[in-house]
Length: 224
Image (cartoon, rainbow, N blue to C red; front, side, top):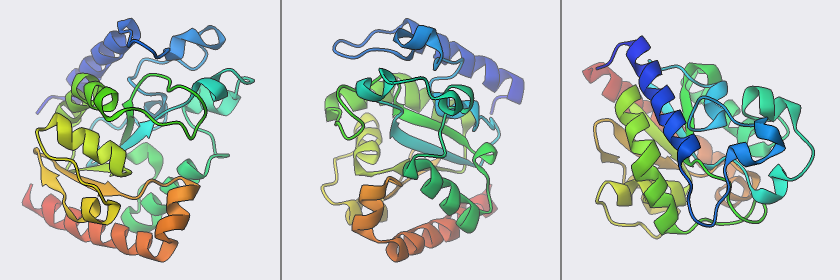
């Protein structure tokens, strides 16, 4: 396992690679607002969640969309890499605190897709493109951080990681939540913390999902 300073250097190299990489059909963080949202991480989320010794790693789907990036500069997002205005962040922070007793700054958080997706915030990214980004940028981050568990927000994120690791796609969210797999560390799926999926799955079931995840985490951590 790398020392903290070596981890930080390796993550910086990945950030530089992300800045230099162009993916056909997508724009980059540096293409908007004179680079106000860009950073020395693969994802701006890591501005506020960059604990290189974290036992828990959070992987979101993507950071932003073309429509949102063309709007006025959001100072909080530019400075912190997230905004309290978005349910995805508020719900995630609440679940982390209640079930793991962790703040966002205690974990390492990143996104599976480090480019700017087309359209609005509800837009989708093809499985092929998402899996390509996971191979190039996410798997190396997991190898650098070496957490006890990786928590993927949403089925699409989880399936992209599964595909990048040679595992088959899973069609239903409930099945994805049950079918964690090991790539050293163990990789899990939970419902995306955005308002739509939260309402569809229901907060009580989501609490049960996260409580079960915490029990699994405790067992895995004890073995280290």
